[in-house]
Structures are given as structure tokens and as C-alpha cells.
View 1 (cartoon, helix red, strand yellow):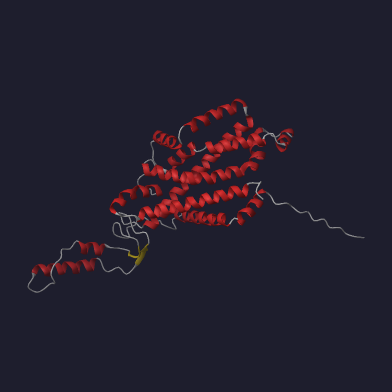
View 2 (spheres, rainbow, N blue to C red):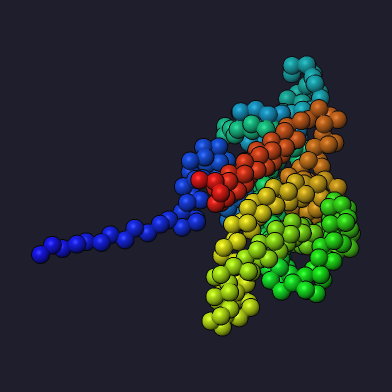
Length: 340
């Protein structure tokens, strides 16, 4: 008697195939590593484990980039304020007084043995530019991520309702969509910013989220129109599934990759938008640092020839935006079922 063993092979799902294709893309994986490193810096900065002392004065004003810099420069500043004099002698009372003053300064501000690295120098308040860039990246990246999540959530909700129900509901949402897209994006952002009249991270998130839902809406509406007539949705309707169950329990998992790609694209645009808003004075309030506020400060420093704050903020933003764009392209290709 022969025993027959049947082995059931389970085919990989959409996300397993997408991850397999993404791992094969070296550029996409390198971009993902850079993005993950930035997100790790944001997490460490938010928890206070990194750059929590970015407001500490560690150098003189506009200290140039150097790999060895003094942690404190009070003694040097005090010495710089002393008038020049001849070497002290027993017949010069003024020289003796200056010598005693220098001795008191030396006792009050002893030589500093601890040294620190300032690869991008210091700003006009003596803050370390590297720590300031990390703290500013926390604000800009959090704004980009949260605003993109809000915009995609609104666009998905509006697109689902519009594409699934159709009729006058579809016409109503298309009317709102036409209004928002008829106005240039930057003018719409500035208009909402002027209406809210409050500065803060939450305000920027609302501004970007309430003006950026049009792109996800257009794509999700088309996906819901296409999937609404498919067999699995009709079968769910036949067994008595509600409209909301069919929209978000059956169709949404099959179109979630579109929303994910849209979110990765919007993060890049919203980070740049936050920089523009902060540069124009509609962004973060005084006391909160972001890449936009750093660039705003740097425009005055360039006149004095102080380029390092501009280089740090612009370089960090360019690296993140480029990496996020490459990752978004790789993710879109990996989630495309037509690409094997």
C-alpha cells in the first residue's frame, strides 16, 4: 500500500512579492537605508537622547567649521576685551594693573581642556550647527510625515465615498476638487496660513494636510470606481456586507499600495513646503527650529560670508528629499503588479 503525500504550496502575497522586488533594487534599498537613518535621528532627537542641548553655547559667534573647537570661550572673549600693553615692569603702574587683571581673568576662566568637534561651525548665538540641523530635521520630518498622513487619509476617505457611491455624491466631491485644484498650490497654502493666523507645528500640519488631499483623492476615486464592479465586491454585496464594509474591508486592502505610494511622494513635497513656509515667516514660531528657519537665518549670514548654516540645512534637506524620492520610485515599481 502506497502512501501519497500532498504538499500544498502557498503562493506569496502582494506584499511579499513587493518586498522581494524592492530588495532586488539596490538604489531603492540604499535610499531606504538613508531614510531609515534620518527617521532614527528624529526618534533619538524626540526622546532627548540626541541634540537635546542644541541651544547650548559651545563656541564664539559664527565660529567657522573645524574638527577641533573649544567647548567654552569665555576666557578668550575676556582676553580680547583687554587693552594691549607693554610687558609689566616695576616702574609702570598701568602695566602692573593690567597684569593683575589678566591674572584674575586666568583664575576666573581657567584654560579649557575639553575639546569638541564643530564640523559645520556655529551660528550667531554660538550653537552647534550639527545639533541644530538634527533638531530642525525633527520638526521638518515630523511635519512632512504627519501632514502626508492627514492628506492621504482625507484623500482616501473622499475618494472612496465619491468613487463607490457615484451620482450626486461624486459630483459634490468633484466640485470641491475642482475648487482646490483651480488655485495654485502655493497660493492655497498661503491663503490657509493667513486665515489660521497662528504659528506652530500643528498649524503647518493642518495647512498642508487640508490642501494636499487632491492628489490622493483623484487616484483613490479611480481605483474605487474600477474595483466597485469586480466580482469579489459583488459577492460581498450578495452575502449582505454593508457599504462601509465593502469600501474599507474589501476594496481598501486591494488599493492600499496606491495610498502608500502617494504618502511617500507627499512627504517629500510637504518637507519642501514647510521649508518654504518657514522661510516666508508662516512656519514654526520663535524658539522652534526647523530647516526652513535655518535657511531664513542663513540668508542674512551669507552677506557676512558665513555659509556653513546654509550648507548644513540645505545639504541635509537635499539628501533626505533625494533619498525619499528614489525610495518612492522604487516602492511604486515594487508594488506595480505589471512589473515582474
